[in-house]
Amino acid sequence: MSAHDTSPIRRSIEVEYWVVDSEGRLVEPGALVETAAGVEREFVEPLLEVKTTPCETTAALEAELFDRLGRVLQRADDLGKRLVPLGTPLHHEEIDELPSERTRIQNAVVGESFAYVRHCAGTHVHVEQQPGRAVDQFNTFVALDPALALVNSSPYFGGERLCAGARSKLYRRMGYDDVPHQGWLWRYLDDVDEWDRRLERRYDEFVARAVEAGVDRRTVESSFDPESAVWTPVQFREAFGTVEWRSPDTALPSQVVRLADTLAATTERVRDASVRVEGDAGRVDDEAVVLPTFDAVLEYVEVAIDEGLDSRRLRAYLDRMGFEVGAFEPLSAEFDGRDRLTPDAARELRLRYADRLARDVRRSRAVHGD
Image (cartoon, rainbow, N blue to C red; front, side):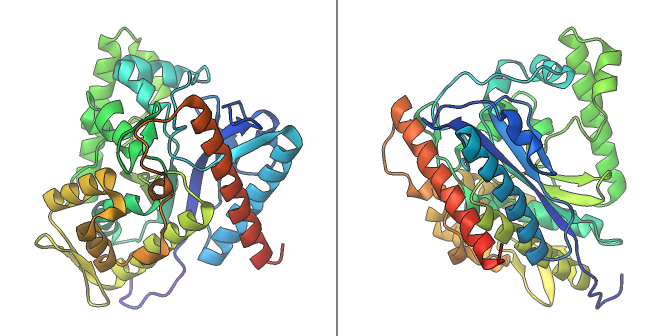
């Protein structure tokens, strides 16, 4: 990789949305999955996933995501359904899984805590791996993990207020608490071989737990490989040739696109600048990418989940790391101070944010002349 490489860096997005009916009740997507390319079912019944292809520019990414979402929303209108861009469904409702061997095994391994994962809707951002700089890119994404605060979209679970980023708390602290190496943030890497060794260790642990829970070893090994048996927030994805960031909530698509744009821009800096770990502050500029110690990153992550952008210290950190913090307006911060929600209030809020999503899509498509 030359010192002044200007080739495009491809990026893509996978984003999940809750599907509700006209009264805000969770329902299955049904015919919505037939609406456009990249529109798929998720592992639980009321979730729909919309994916883009790898795009070389933010404009292309935005155009594709909003075109696909626009088609889904048009079909949803015909079916009396809506899409909700919130990280949790706000109130507890029974959420059934789609029958599959993979989810059966995960339930066996994770146990009752896997119920928390069923209530999580998130965003995955893929950015093309940079030859010769992939480890630096991975480590930088680890340091950027506190940016999940920029799109915290729900403070509630089961009708109870948890924190600014309820989905992240469910996923990291509650869902995978008994198998932390599977779902928590991993430390910085020294080389790619270290990543492979970590994967193998985690995979061996996963298989052993499944077998201990009564699952046939051959069934586990045919359903999972080392890469698909971990849900850590930052991953190398060999199949896609990307570094994947899995931490953000689902949110308004314009905010998700902005997030992906910053990750791609930071990756451009990584391939042209020196990257080092030093101190607790961190910064990204034209000369260097300075990552804070991993322990400092974990402290920022905890603040991102608990307080979100209410923390001045976190806002300052994200600003130093290259994010235009003021351009983000996390939906989670818009909720009033109620400690509890009734089921009726939760359904009303789902519909309110379904309207916000529809307006966001209409506005962007109008800008693109659609």
